[in-house]
Image 1: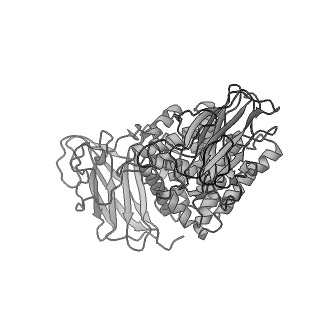
Image 2: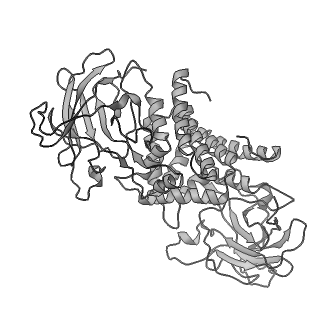
Image 3: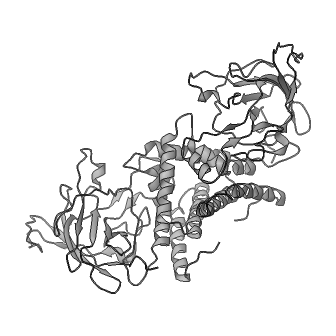
Amino acid sequence: MAPRVSADQARREQMVTERVVDSFEQAPPRLRELMQALVRHAHAFVRETRLTEAEWEAAIGFLHRAGEISTEERSEFILISDVLGISMQTVGVNNPPRDGATEATVLGPFFLDDAPEVPLGGDTAQSAPGEPAWVHGTVTDTAGQPIPGARLEIWQADESGLYDVQYTDGRTAGRACLFADEGGAYRFWAVTPGAYPIPTDGPIGGLLEASGRLPMRPAHLHFMVSAPGYRKLITHIFVEGDGYLTKDAVFGVKESLIKDFVRHKAGEPTPDGREVPDTWTEAGFQIVLVPEDGS
Amino acid sequence: MAPRVSADQARREQMVTERVVDSFEQAPPRLRELMQALVRHAHAFVRETRLTEAEWEAAIGFLHRAGEISTEERSEFILISDVLGISMQTVGVNNPPRDGATEATVLGPFFLDDAPEVPLGGDTAQSAPGEPAWVHGTVTDTAGQPIPGARLEIWQADESGLYDVQYTDGRTAGRACLFADEGGAYRFWAVTPGAYPIPTDGPIGGLLEASGRLPMRPAHLHFMVSAPGYRKLITHIFVEGDGYLTKDAVFGVKESLIKDFVRHKAGEPTPDGREVPDTWTEAGFQIVLVPEDGS
């Protein structure tokens, strides 16, 4: 969009940008590249929109409030990045589809790296309430060869849409790590995920509301899968039929990641003989990793 | 800069941007315009620079630390905006030069709106230490007509480069308001400003250091001038001969705002008969305001 200003004014504005760009000339190459691109885009944003001083003040206030509400376990800045699709764009730039490899999606703000280990076939949900879900598949490379012992980190919201870090009692639930077997196969119990709103008590909640956007995320189960010699995969699987699949507040849905969570009747025998008094679901997810040197 | 990617990948990345842009389609017109421009530029930044996931994490950490160090009286987010020239670009967009009006510059993070009033010719410095400076001029409109009773807010750093909000004892000094006389003339005592570094104990200090940029601001005295029917003017005057005039960390210097602070010998009589035992300086600053409906 061309600024609606005189040629003289446009030249003056361009000179401000160039002066700031030049100030990063002595930075190390990659930092220089990043800062100069950031400056050019930030200035172009101000010039194109003819940002008013009151709007600039509102933006500063927004960031200030984002800082105030952020804690060690809750980053409003990740939410801002997620809701503006910056996170998904970064995921896409760094994880182009290749050779049938499993697609990546956003990490989100709820991952913790010290989740407890459970045995293969164990329960990742622990005390997280919800309908049991049996999830299984095989981890292979792009040539279809199984990857024995691949490490899987699983985390999810419970049936109320809460992650354990949102519980008030500090307990760990709905997150665990486990290892695939010698044939790359894995299986575990979780709970059937449910849709939930991202936290709306900070400034990003106000932005979504003012914009007429929903804060909802479709139901999903997080995976982080790693094995020596392969690129770490960060992804989710989504639940087929979820009403929010086309309205994900963070734009994380990819067609290939939507899975059928088949519902079984109460009392139907489970794959591992676990006694489940009520209904349970079952979903398969084949995971394909890319070699580390694959580009 | 064209991304170094396949046409397929470029199309996929463009689709992510379009999906996020579309999500703001229902926002009120101005919010929609701002958010869609912000999304397009933020995504273009990620795509052009091929931002890595580690760099994204570093950016989130930077913002998180900016939030942590910010308080009611110190906004690291204003500093970020200043140091990236976003503040000056916003000032320039909203205050194009016209009809000889005085040029605007950045507000900075140190303005407070409850400064004490001093009489015309009074001392704005109060207990702020430094060499006395006699500052005077006339407030007129762009036709040269005086503006009687124009309000002037003055604030500045003392000879050590500290604003009163940076003092540990909470006292008010180096800030005051006063009113021009019936002929638009004004005069007051301040202290000769000195150059100083912007606060470097937050993440912006680290960015400047990593980029090989100085944190210094050339010596300056802040003015905010207002009168009914005129656009509020926010500006500084700078001290001629200051070594940092071409290296201002926030890009605020304009040629027309550099003034000669003429130094007088110790004991030389002052314009208002004040006894000054040591040297003192004197600077003139003619202020021209734009009518509120001037565009």
